[in-house]
Length: 81
Image (tube, rainbow, N blue to C red; front, side):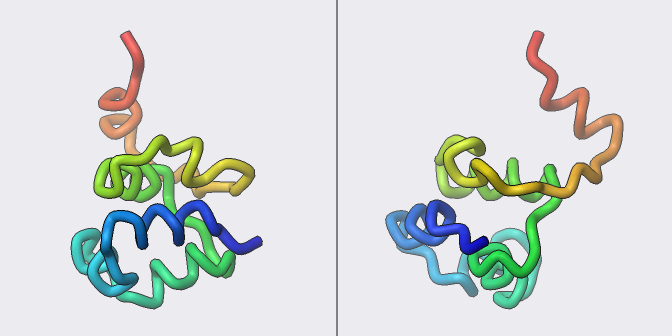
């Protein structure tokens, strides 16, 4: 399923796919795949995208399955106190 929320948020912030990918340390193809629904980001990458674009993670990735592959340290960093 295509991720229009991610595409629109990226464009609103003035990023190209290549520019966003560069900030994240990925290739343009990774961002393109996330936007076109060919793959989904890991949980830590989804948080990073939301921070870069200053958008709520639920808004960007609602209805999509993100890959829950993160370390215990990453989980504890995101825990709500």
